[in-house]
Length: 329
Ligand SMILES: C[S@@+](CC[C@H](N)C(=O)[O-])C[C@H]1O[C@@H](n2cnc3c(N)ncnc32)[C@H](O)[C@@H]1O
Image 1 (tube, helix red, strand yellow):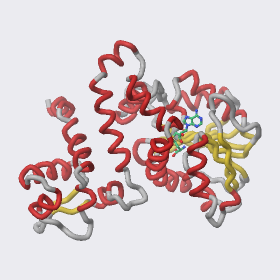
Image 2 (cartoon, helix red, strand yellow; image 1 turned 60 degrees about the horizontal axis):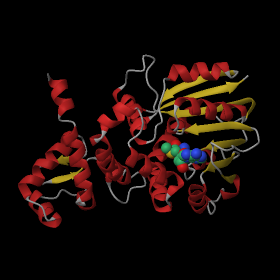
Image 3 (cartoon, helix red, strand yellow; image 1 turned 90 degrees about the horizontal axis):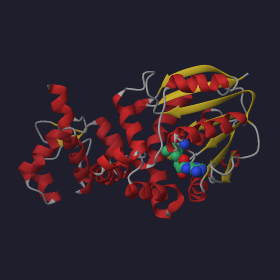
Image 4 (cartoon, helix red, strand yellow; image 1 turned 45 degrees about the vertical axis):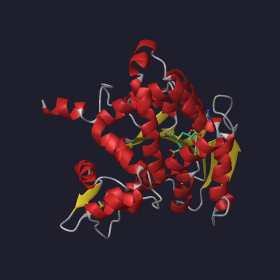
């Protein structure tokens, strides 16, 4: 019964997180100083008892902590939800609130097998449709992916490689992290025009800025017509339905020189494609948001094998992502 009740009530912590962000709770909380509930409630203009109850839910989610003195951020709450943090997920939390409306229409999605119309429009705005939305999405991805990129460079060895194509690069956080780790590497960032503009603003003035190159484009039209030692597809395949994602992965593989590698970072499903929970949620969510999908690690391995690659590494990253690395034979 507990798992059923947990599932039934799981919208409550999500709503608490979204409302806490909206009322500015995370702008007031500190990690190094506790705040009394009454003080917090008066700063936020809320009822103290109601706020206390909401904070208790957030404490069970590991976001805040209560001591004898009052409330403070937990270490991970501070890292991912404080406004000034370079890893802040606040923009994603805001976006998740917009998704709730799309899930009110889940029955329609189930009947049609197509994304929620309004959500699709919103997602397309994030992918070049509207500059402001595109910038907010790219910033959110940068915050989240800086953690993933830092983990990835600890497990992949690019010492022998000199250039990399990052397909759907966002603002280039993977590229920057890889160059910091391997100073001999140059990286070409490929993304939609508005996104590449943001990447340029971020990367051009860095000490290694000359090692970063930029290409504006739509992967549905054409990818750069060149070969690279390394081709990275981080969190991009799921944006497309499976057939189109396979085309994109094929085109990515074709741009890898012999002896070079393709790196795929994704929210993969298990071999049964029925778990883990976060990936199944993601798989459904890609349908609701944009008509995309995710697949299993094994399918990716077998796909790479068919394209003439040997899978040399598979390892997990934070937040449920997996990295698959294949070397072109
Ligand atoms: C989920 S983000 C991943 C960003 C980055 N690779 C990372 O892991 O942080 C997907 C990226 O794909 C880009 N994108 C979406 N559709 C695209 C298209 N048709 N052509 C080129 N880039 C696209 C988006 O602008 C966005 O930067």
